[in-house]
Image (cartoon, helix red, strand yellow):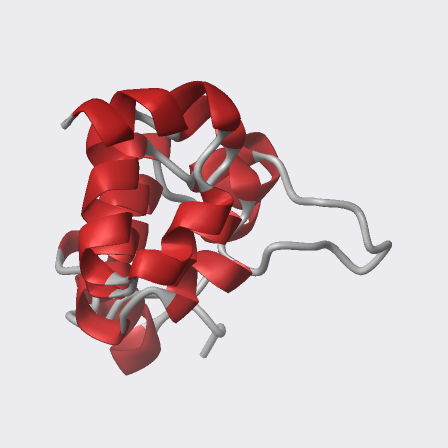
Length: 130
């Protein structure tokens, strides 16, 4: 019997058709210490970019902002980061600058006033006007 026949093959097929209910944690860095890209993760996990991002959002919603700490930068989206700062405003520190918006920074500061230190200077004035 080959490794991909019988019960094991059936289980592998079922996992592809019905992905596990628990989010899969993707490593942020490869063995060489370099950040992993989406294409590298796709090769490793056989998932589409959309599926990986949906998985990361589910992980943040289930486990909280700490998932943002270990998530590859290439998988961080506005929606994922917003969910993280709504869980804990201090997660704003780990949101890429290009994803920080007035809405996200406001949500972070409402959750935890200490998050103000991670709001970009260009957005602080807009926050003070609200």
